[in-house]
Image (cartoon, rainbow over all chains, first blue to last red; front, side):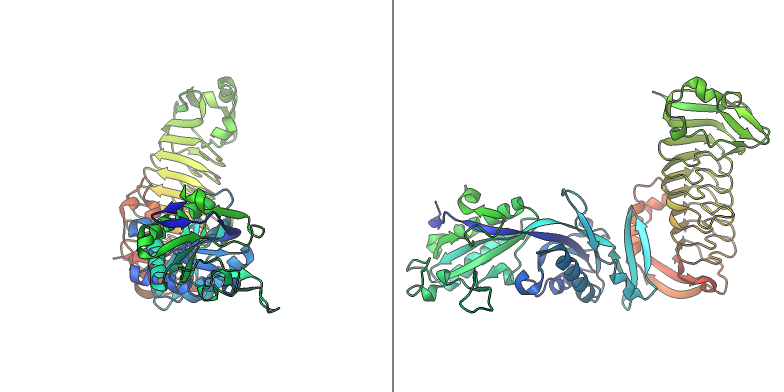
Length: 302
Length: 268
């Protein structure tokens, strides 16, 4: 399969079942909503060491938010509900409660078969030291916590659902700048897709990993088959003209969301085409035994 | 099917307990069975057909015509269905109703919406004393739902109210929000003396400066984000509160003689 001179590998991305949640953060303006969201989703690239994978899904206009202020939608994913709950709580407490003018609301209320409510301000409210006030409107409970800039308003819980993490594809290019340019184009296209985040820095990861290592204590190590500088000394996946490989990892609320995002991203990368040094699209997997979900590139692009 | 209609023939001599005439208690009953129900009135029992002309069949929607201030307990313990009253009603309208859908085009007596648990009661007229309050011996008044009064409310509106929203478009009498436990009361008009007396928690929204007693303390003017959310939740309600969109208030907290976690928010 070849799109605009870019060959699409007959392979698949291997993804895992995760737990996902969404939080809507509003503030005085978009600038401060973005600051709060960036802070909350900082150091959240991979569950391996960060606990959660998180990112900004999109910006929200005032008419789209519960309190009519500019906002940002944030998605968080973790391998289990316990970790997600804990991470949400600490990140809410340290990044949203602390950020001037912010308020936070539930981002998942219906539309999914199984929604579990997890605390948003349910425990955070105790920061109010007895001065916190509960208010219920339309059957939903909100907490008003007095803080130094006024009042921190936050919904009591948000919804958590079974989600999918680890969808991915690799862009193989003739040079590092060309690989990055293709990734940037792909990320711009994928950011328009709802219900997904690309958790790595700028959405792009350069250190794709394989399972295992020659060192006993490491469970994952560099994906040498895709490292261009090792072409001659490992069982390389790379042909001579490939000089740089970058990966885009996608977490989404459903498999359909990841399908849509992968298609949008791959199309955008292929649009640059062979003329701009983009040669091949591949995907990362572990032989298909570890993850429940397989995203076959050629089916997605069909 | 047309709504089940009770048209009062003449003003009863004694007060009448209308609590058996609710959709859930009349469901599946024939016209003859409904007519034979006996209502307590003073020390006597009166058949329904002696007091009312009965029409219609749909017990899910009940209409009272020629309402009268002696008809007590209309919609008491209601769990579903709707009740509409044309004319006045007596005391205990919607008393401890779990899921109310009650409209009164007329005035209501004392203890309207007392112990209300959910749903909506709209009084297109005035409400008597102890609106949404707890009856003596009970420790909590209204526990949920929405009450709209387009006219005035009497004294002690929201006494020991625990949860829910009471919106009074006219004036409220003395001791408004007294001993309030939680919830929200809004008054577009004026309030009488000793507003928030013994108020423990809860929010009272006022649009005119009230006379405050010493244990309610001024906390200054603020822009409170939850007010936008609250007024947004009022949007669909059949009340003038639905058109309000303000979040700048003067905040008074109290009653400090009783925990002091309540608040009186005065819009400027």
